[in-house]
Length: 248
Image 1 (cartoon, rainbow, N blue to C red):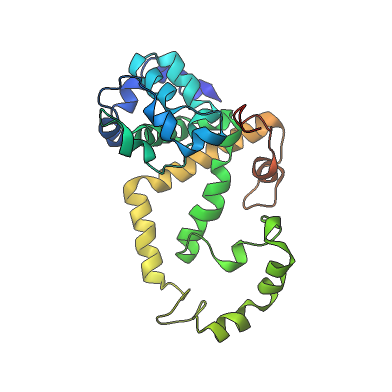
Image 2: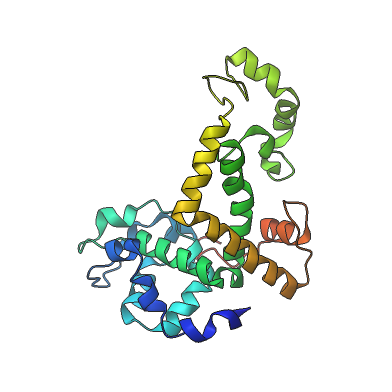
């Protein structure tokens, strides 16, 4: 899978990062003080240190940057931007992580890590729901087959949601104004145009492409939607290697 981009990018990863405005805004002059790690909520639970990420980037070592792009490390950040509020030099590790994630998706490196492979699940649920429904979540999409923690009460709600929504005064999938209304086709078409213009449509295609290649490598069935081996694997598999030693 790496053969497609190995030659032209192996020595260019740092330069590619510098083309991302988030990287330009996020990295100024890190003094490696560790304040970002101290304030980071993700670092409290995951084996994750924003300071280490910035340190590696500042080294401009392309081999180490490649390791980052292939690692679970860059997918632990919650993008809360707590790091921005505390850095004495005005760095924003959260923005640097965004740039790393984008490059990892662009080059297909995301498929080499457990958390990275879950990008396909995000694309096929939240991403596709936005395009199809105009919402990042909608009632039929959040069932106990994918979210068992919702419990039997949610199963009942799923079976009776139209009546419940009517009694609550919502306008679920209805025309005109109202909570959870049906988004007009012209608005959905505008959303699609935004995805096309910003490169999101191309990015979605690359996520599908590299995910399919990884599925072949793992010898898992790869189909559209959520009813296939690869999707079920990336959605449910947990190696239990992500938590910090302090929080097993």
